[in-house]
Length: 286
Ligand SMILES: [Zn+2]
Ligand SMILES: [Zn+2]
Ligand SMILES: [Zn+2]
Image (tube, rainbow, N blue to C red; front, side, top):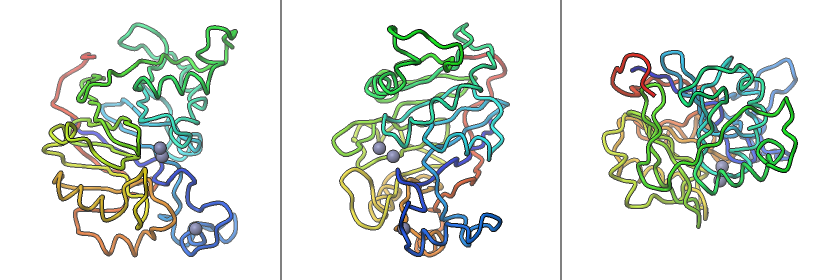
């Protein structure tokens, strides 16, 4: 099955431009007037998220604080599921913006009329705490609350969720002291907020066409991979193509990309790539 991955956002937690910053990258990401495009629109990076589309199905990984604007920009009109990587603000705060999309009551394999959210246990707990008015038993559930069901992904490496014939596998990822969740889906993998990869994750990343990796900046950082380290990870994992994301204002798009090998590119908001998400299955496998 052919699928398309759209980068909804490729920025670090503060976004680019970073508020109050006058560096060259932030200035180049800011339109000189509301009517003009930014001089380098690829430096304008909203908070990190990707949309995966195949055979009419739409799934996103993470819903950050820019989700509403991203969904408007990419004309997202329905959503079948959301996968979460971890509970940091730049990855979960847009959950409430799912509401109108969850009111569409699309039929789903679990028989409910809710939109499934998938998260590991610590992330699910964080989402339930932040949005206690949606999930809390002690709160009267508003009729306008998000119609979602939060499913726990087992902590096991390679734990699978199968959606419309596509297998989404949990890839354990180290984010500083925490273990969070990356995903492999068919021939592509999305590993954001990564400082290291546990050894058990490496076999799950064999034979990749597309690897999407965190590359925050040039200097090392305690909870994120930096440019040199991400290049080394690509050389180790050997995907056919790699795209870097979760980037700060340290990385100017054109200058940085010019320094990279041809199989590694910097992602930018709105970039679309085609890949194979799985074998043809026909209809109805859930
Ligand atoms: Zn992040
Ligand atoms: Zn800046
Ligand atoms: Zn994070």
